[in-house]
Length: 290
Image (cartoon, rainbow, N blue to C red):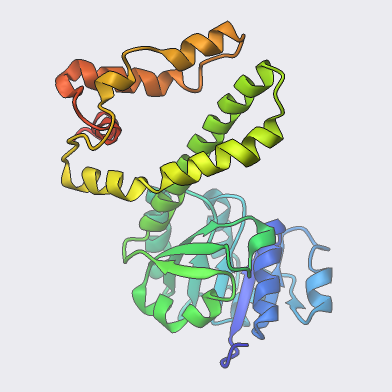
């Protein structure tokens, strides 16, 4: 239970905004909520939240304002709402966007006299308030440190630095890794299903243990990227791309190889550039040529 109750407003009561407001209530904070479409606040009001009809009322009632709406384009009109006094407030924007949008929004918010934090929520609404969730923050260090107890009501809070663009950049980097994993699963599932195999059993007994074992090698690969030294510690790229076994078997099974094909193409390009003796991590140099 929190020892310091704070006044906080949540603007936007979609699934995530509602989850955030609920976590704040559970932590004992004084919560004011606003949503463009009326009627979404009933459950939160029953738990102790105060629902208001305007952004100005919400901002006036809170020292911290959480913004959780569809996109950055919708935030500007909120900042311009008649009577909304942002001076002295802390704005925590957890709307999805780009690093450039975050930096521009930080300038706009600070020009109004408020401190700014950009946030990237690494969780689905059901995980908010639980141990598996974490939220990335960047922007005002002072605001983060002053209100970390409040932010921790959502999930584990991870501060990345003063540059407001760091949270959305790392958010998207994490999502790219997630979709890469999902893509690998989809291809693997298609192969197993093409032979009439049970995908659920394959996933539980074979795929998960394999991926967990391979994930253990990521820190070493990351160290190679940071050092720019890709000397092989296992299987050199040239050996890995000597045959397109995955593509050949996929085609033979009637499974499209289009998820794996771009990865193979990058690996072969790296070999053609004279780096066949290196580890897979060297492919990063083709994605971010410095």
